Length: 270
Figure (cartoon, rainbow, N blue to C red):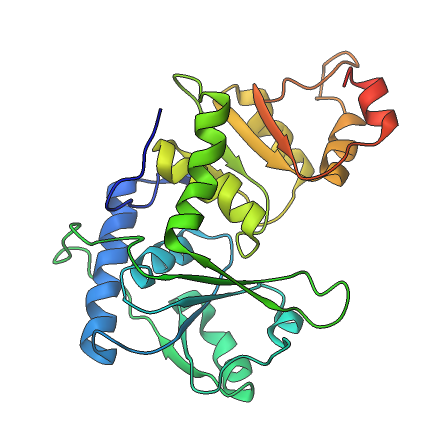
């Protein structure tokens, strides 16, 4: 059984065919933490991050998680940045170098953009107290009105990854597939946090990409995947190239965030 530790660093991430090692991501996070500490001080007030599914953004998340302030996780969809209540004016919007184009939108909403520098990992240490901040602000989907903020402590976010790992008994090998948005609690818990607490590689997809996901399934290298009923339905109606029509070789552990349709359960054996 896995139990909480004082600090968790980022897991290894496979993204667009490239491996980002846990050590490299920790060094990037540490370099950005040091740079932000010099610029903003140790108590910078509310911090916000546009939580895209990208290794750079994951490193930025861990960097911000070591400050003693809450971190607002903004969706990748800019339309969802208009929430009820509105984002706190003056909150610091931290952007990775690739996110510089979001600065103008942040300014329009009263945020104060801060662009992270190219990280100098040659001088960065890795002994940072990652995931030791007070917590994170997520947002609801906005399906019934504007998105609303939902606060989760760091302990609760880590527990969201610990709970499924402890409940199902993670296999002795194999990684995690992340195809859900990391700005939502379900995606954060069941992809990034599961990989973090289990210290397993995370194959990170920018979005639900059917053929990329099927390729990861077929590799046999990943033993945990979480998705939605819609994803399960789409996957259940596809076959791998060259394979006879049969259930896909899905990971041993698949977690679905809702009720599967009767047709999916019937056609795929429940």
